[in-house]
Amino acid sequence: MRRIVVPAVVALLLLPFAGPVAAADHPAVTLSSAQAGTGGSVTVGGTGWRPHTLLMLLVCGRATPSRGVVGGTNSCANADGRAVTTDAHGTFARTLPVTEPPVPCPCVVHVATVTGAAAEADAVLQVAGHPVAPLPAERAGGRLSILSDTRLTGSGSLLTWFGAPPSRTLVFTAGNLGTSPIEDPVFRVGTSHGVFAPQWDDRQWHGTLAPGRKAQITLPVELPAGAHGDYTVSLEYGGKVLAEQPWGVGRPWGVTLFWILLCLVVPAALFRAGMAVVDRVRPRAGGVRHRKLTRPALRLPRSRTPGPGPEPEPTPTLPWFTPESAPGGPAGRLSAPHDDSPTSRTTPITKGPP
Image (tube, rainbow, N blue to C red; front, side, top):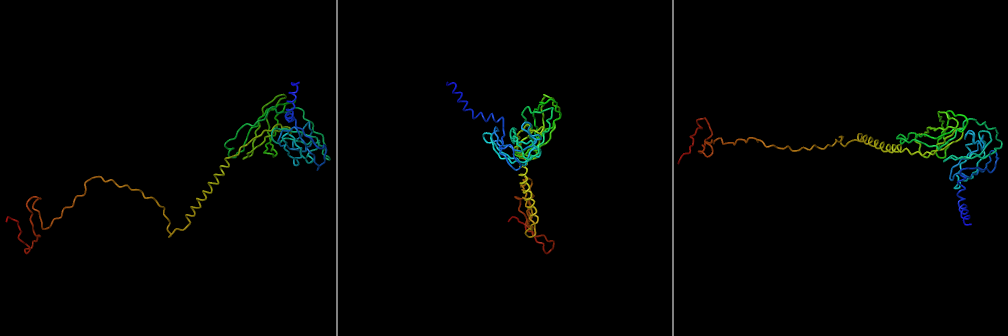
């Protein structure tokens, strides 16, 4: 008995946690009314979605739950769509105004994820007064399907750091599940930023995919110049979104650095130019301009080398004294000034013995 009770208690405890996980693989949509006229509204409820996921609700024509929306979002009333975010249990409820789609019915309320892994669901809605037309015949032949997760390859460069357009390569493996070959398929690659609608570009893959075969396909993806933030790359073929891939783009800091340097260099250059003009225009005191002060060159004293000095001047002698001999010899003789006139002749005085 105990062996039976213990597994039952464990199963009851795990039941609340296993329910949402299993239901998350099969999102469903319900309507408060299956028929409504233009100008009215219906309440759209959903279960089994991923928690805290942003969804888009649209009224679409030329669509059935089995075939989906033929022609993609071009068959929907995009201007009157509504957005809603699921709660922690993956459920939601939102009022949606009823508007005539641009194409005839059969019509559905189309619910699809905006971000993250692709998921969608449809609920039949009869729009009163809107024309109804049969769906176009389904094409027989090749049927392309994605066999592996898509991924973005590549990296940025120095030019991207300065605001060049970021580019990557979308890589995925596709297989032909139909009965006829698919030649040169044309894909639509869309890039969306946040909750905005994607911008689509046609990308053609050159090659032939035989029935039952698969091939790796690479498609280029490019964003506008200066783009940064969280982007989502979507892949569409035959009017149906096949895959979505998130892409986080870094900010081009080189552009920010350029503007910072520009804001510092330009004012400094203008200030220097203005000061030079003011220095030339303003008058000087006394009408004389200031000369540029220069530091005098330092002159070192010249070294004097020993050498012969100037010759000493001769000692002047008295005109009336003539030495007789060198010092230490006989005493000199005193004489009067020489005069040739007879009146001025005198007897020389001689010094003799006493």
